[in-house]
Image (spheres, rainbow over the protein chains, first blue to last red):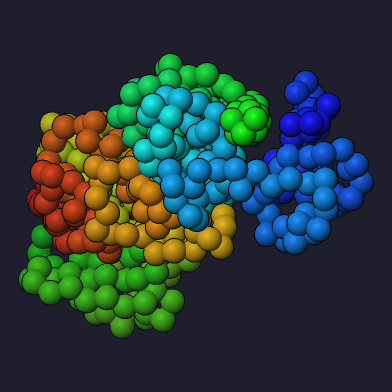
Amino acid sequence: MGVTVMLLCDIGNTSVHFYDGRKNTKYLCNSFDFTSVTQEVYYINVHPECESQLQTLANWHDLRDLILWDNYYETMGIDRVVCCEAIDDGIVIDAGSAITVDIVKKGKFEGGFIYPGVKNMQETFARLSSRLDLSFNLELDLDKMPKNSTDAISYGFLRTLKSEVERHSGIIYLTGGDANALAFLFANVVVKENLIFEGMIKILERRC
Amino acid sequence: MGVTVMLLCDIGNTSVHFYDGRKNTKYLCNSFDFTSVTQEVYYINVHPECESQLQTLANWHDLRDLILWDNYYETMGIDRVVCCEAIDDGIVIDAGSAITVDIVKKGKFEGGFIYPGVKNMQETFARLSSRLDLSFNLELDLDKMPKNSTDAISYGFLRTLKSEVERHSGIIYLTGGDANALAFLFANVVVKENLIFEGMIKILERRC
């Protein structure tokens, strides 16, 4: 690679997230100055507004070009793709503003789906009715049909997701901001905070 | 009952829906004049603003007082309750602005959950990202993992719901504005446009 310290960066819709192999650092997207980084940076970016500036900076390297896109689909978020690259077999669940669920078998992406994230789904119920403007019960008994409003929306959000995910076999790799909050949903689950960076490292290593 | 023509009315958040045993008639809630009806009307109402006026009209009779509430929970929508009263065994799915799924066993409500309706969930995805501002594919192959954005959100909305509903046994009674659009999701399903009125009639008959 020719780089002594490899700095990785995941640019999301709201945050710029760095990882240097040991430490995670996060900044807000709209106040971050990309020219302030002098090291070589390997990045992925889903933020359309940042893209043109990044392309003018010689030390910022887009990992998008190293993806074997044949395995994926064109409009699939690069963050989903990179998380899939991190594993050989199993189910990747990235629980952020959206929850993405992707199936990987023998290193190949088999398809996946998108579900609203915790905050977005809570807002959806609140918009439906002021009586449903409630926080989810994240300690819900998932084997019992609800008999109150909080549990009725929590079950609607969580149990449906769980029931579908459990139709698929394999280890569940859970990542994203709500990974810890949602881990109780699944048996056979591993919380992987740095899954996206593991995927980026694997992509870079493959090139060497 | 002492009424020659029994007029039933279901007052929802947006519409005033009449049924006279043969014919359905719908009006918009905010432009409807309740005093224009001179017949005896048996109604249920979820619209808080209409309630005070209805209580002053002698020919409008609230069915809420005839419900055996011990079987339900206090904040449960009266429309859900009345649909449950319509059946003895099975799963009631009311697909409107919200989708409610309720389990009834031997005439007893066993619990239920709330899920966003088609339009609301579509708006949720649109808010998440302009790239997800798409109409659902309501002819989705539900046995295939998606490999494009439209199918990925459609599957996230529809397959999760189907997978959870299918964990429960029994006939599915599907009602509400999106009943016909969602019938393809389930085997063992009966679309019942007038389920809520069937429930109202059953409640009235029980009193006789």
